[in-house]
Length: 445
Ligand code: GLU
Image (cartoon, rainbow, N blue to C red; front, side, top):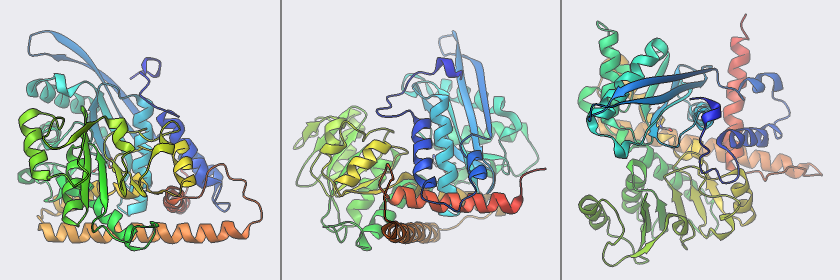
């Protein structure tokens, strides 16, 4: 993708890469001891591959598609991150998302660097055959730039187990004679996927939120029992968050998909919601519910708000209207730095993306380990290990936030442009680790 051709996404305060840099600066200004030169390395992607390729469409016409794969950093291990199919995706955004993966992997302690890939296309307008040809051609264009120890893709926006099967098959055909399963995660279980991977991001979101609330970090909310929840997005992540939060005792009062949302203050019946969505292709119109827009859903009066769809949803123009006590970032980058500032001013807690949605890459790591060892773990084992990882990441982030808050309290002047929050604390943990390991490895040559 050419930068000049970039279609501006709906970035409401900042573009995705600006957001990454602002968040990086928010962390850096609070860690005096860190090696600034090494940190500078982390502002730039290590490797960017842009590809353009033709695809024969079902009607016999030929269309050109553009895609990219960005490896942001490989200090802790091979690149790791999703491939998304979206009409509005751009290279800046993919680079920013790759950086988020670097922070996420460092924080959750899986031995990977950060990466992300995308193909500009509208999957809703493509047939399954066309999607297969796009996936195969994209993966063949990437060639040996992906691999079990090089860069390992996974599902992301509008890609799924089927897409990952095609990724695997293409790579396997190109590298016959090896156990290639670990080249991609999020595969169907029969093809070496991990049980629990499909639900892992949503489940991790709920584990993190429950643990965070249990640590009395959210004023006025001491557990999930009876807590009211609004979720923006009813895809793979949002639907699992709804189901898991419900199982943990919460009341799901609002849900949305790309066409809009529904509200029922008494609590939505999730089985009815899923059946209605299956039948009508949308949530809107479910009897007994009030229709709403995706924007208005964010402003619903609830205890917990879970943006589980797109980035840049809570920003300067709407953060003041948010009424939740806790916002849990199930999506990547749903709150802009300005949004963070306003939410903090209102006393609203935020569980940041690199912590809250790290369950996906965590179980991707479990899948990778199982593939390399030709093992298949049981669901209980996967979920137990996931729970431990999520709880530990919450614990260390909260501890770090507390120690940073105490340090800041001792300093006479507070000249920081942004308040100290959990996003900053979690990012500082990741940066500390990345800088320490970069120093241990040494700058080559
Ligand atoms: N695409 C997911 C994310 O943004 C998962 C990445 C992975 O499993 O590698 O975290």
